[in-house]
Image 1 (cartoon, helix red, strand yellow):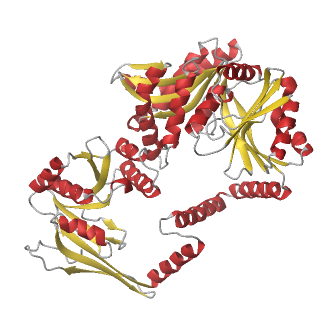
Image 2: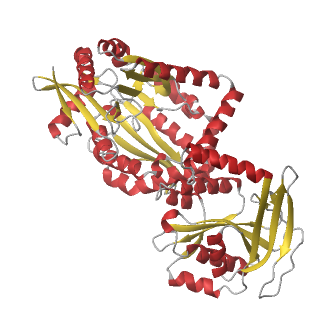
Length: 591
């Protein structure tokens, strides 16, 4: 056996044909093992990780493939596709499998790679069975742990097909959902297979996926440009042999659910689904899945619907089988393997006690927040922040200024027109657009907070939008009365029944320094005034940039609230009227 090492995925048609022929010789062929998949990962993530491609030949025939990536120091190797593929493995003709694995481990040792991490390795693969013995021959210690249970709908016989089909067609709850959706417009299923079709539909799918994740308090992987590039490249490559399908559930001509999936070697893969949150009550995502399973039952070329990684409850409703994956660490250091084992068993112990798991998660989240904040600069900085926090609890004084908007909104309208800006209401799609344009953690945290308010239906949000459609500032409005001000831990009393409060204004980092804050709050205030409301805004006395921005908008400073704490006494809040150049409005002394 001759082993050839590459530092990239060669774009070679002959290699593609031999590689994919090898995939089809495996006991369980998967689309994740194909040449196209490796090439799409290589193109999308080329700048972020060095690659090691091992090709094994007998004479001129390709008999083995494994695509790896390494860390920058080349001390650790892992499957090239592990962050994108639900299954990863050594690709090899069965009779060469052990010899190929042996040759790869020998080469890894020669390259001085101390650790090999194999994620998403199928537990039923020959690699999982033989790895311990092969690694030991090259003095690698191995620790294997369970990873995922992948639910599957098995259609291996006519009887199973008929049983699954009856289950799908007899689901009364989903039948009602289809009936309700059909009252709006006919409900249809459509599969996009050509690159031209997928290319035009992909941006809407990606935006919907990011918006859906925001609605559940998470950041979608499609918010990252590398992931979108990867899926676009993958669709371009897989559309040629016809292995990709971007499925839509449509109400009329409006898509309400999507699945970016694959049809390969008799398997239909449920890979990256999402749905429009506005239709959530009618379970459009689940309706799409069940329609796909129904089609698969009626297609004799499909013998499996694989629901992929993750133990979501909805998958259990329809699954008739499962496939398990492993996470295996092979290390030249016995200590590394012992640490992996200790970490795994400790985590399992913690998870077995729900209250303990909850406490540990909260502690880890708090520590992570401290370390990742813009002010954090290492352990000493984190300690300093903790000390300052304790001091603030003992000796604390804060003052918040409140400003009332001017009566005239003509200046705000002129500013928007002059800069080709518009004011629009905020929805999840607005937040998704911003998320897909940033990797700034502060901005992403704000978007999650904003999505939570939309979900709770608290307040109203406005976005200042640039000419190209990009939101460049967000501003929230809520009733003044009973507004809980977290800065003071105090509920406000409104100066008048028509008073509303502008709060939590935010400019993404990439758009700061251009005066958008002032333009946005002026425009929002003018719109509220026109609706018969009395807009207010506030700022801490220590937030100099915010105070300057507000004062430039001609908002008038009316009063302030001060919160004081001395040692362990209860904090007190008092109001203070401020002298202004304009007549004072009636202000409640309770603030």
